[in-house]
Image (cartoon, rainbow, N blue to C red):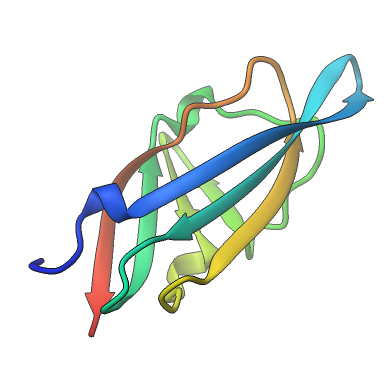
Amino acid sequence: LGQCDLNNIKYGVVRTGRILANKDEWNVTMYHTCKQCSMGNIIFRNCEDWNTVEPVDPDILLKHGRFCILKKGQFLKPGESVTFSYAWNPPVIWVPFYFDLRC
């Protein structure tokens, strides 16, 4: 993959302070730090641990068994980010598993 690897897929999680059905709400921003290429088909593993009482738009994050796919596989340009919120305890540790490059 050359210029980019899984370490270029980053995320930040912030507790919003809202409580929904006795669950904390979390705001998540997913982004990539690869400056040379766009990244797509970004898949996270360990999604079997991810649940939410707040619906998440499947166009943003789609859960499929133990995997989640970001933006239905669409490519993110360098520096582009995706943000969504979910409500569950505890927050998920997002583990990038796979991606494709477009340079």
